[in-house]
Amino acid sequence: MLYSRGCPGTPPTCRSRKHSGSSRKRSLAICHLKGSSSDKIAKRVMSLLSAQQHDDIGNIQDIARIFGQRSWSPVPLFFTSEIPEEAVALLLKGRVLLLLDQLPYALIAPPLISDLWTVYSDKNLPKSLMFSIQWLRILERPAAASRFGELRWTFEFWA
Image (tube, rainbow, N blue to C red; front, side, top):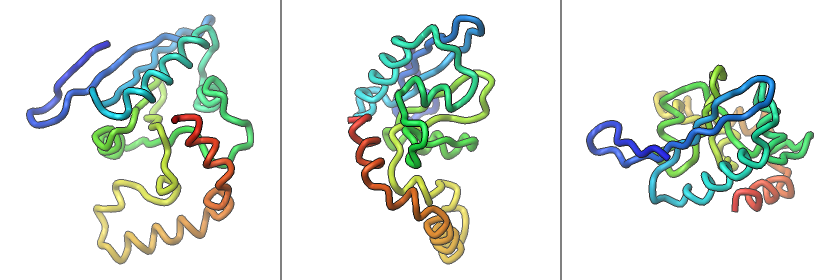
């Protein structure tokens, strides 16, 4: 495990690297705050990846399969983001980041119900516009927001 301190005043992060795949080796980095509640989740991610280290990973669905996510589940086991600012903000809030080489997304675990309609960059907008956009996202995803059985399974998975 690697420990680093990025900028003065930021908490130390813990990074681990795993390799996966038999025909095409891919590197995965697991990042989380050292000494936070995300330690348990990071250990679970590392154990799942170690158990399936010979499986080839080509996309996000392959990672979801390794984690044991149900095929048609409307609630994901992780939240994805292409925006570095958002990934760092969630890391500082105690989440775990999974970074796969040659993939532009950061996979963030565990997902919260608010991740279905809230994006960190929304705070750069005026409040009235921010709430309007979030309300439209809530209306857009009624099936995912109402599937509490699937959501409970997701939270039990990360517990």
